[in-house]
Image 1 (cartoon, rainbow, N blue to C red):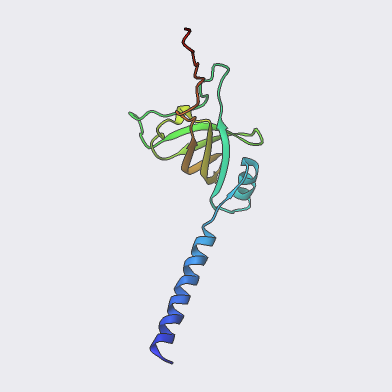
Image 2 (cartoon, rainbow, N blue to C red):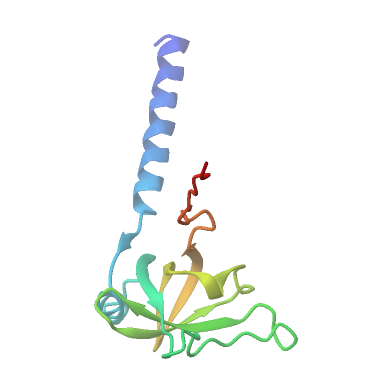
Length: 141
């Protein structure tokens, strides 16, 4: 075999390994019920859960715990998924900026006992560039 053939085979092998490693790391979007079922089956793969923060009648977030003076790397909150199932979520990092203003939250992680341990939190915040009504007044002559 020529050197060029060996190099070509090595390049193809490396490409296949990269594709297989990225495909096995892909996670899926599931509700909390499926995340709990996966945890009971011993499946510890990462999943995405989409939901909204639990809020009271006045719009204040319920169940959020974050005290940076005690532990800046412990943040917990209650998330309500698309099936309206409430679940306690723990995030072992500081609270994300603008978390209180978020409309929708996507968390990545897995279930550990009775809590969902999040590795990543993605926020969908309300746009600060919303269109406001513009009143046009005409000058009277």
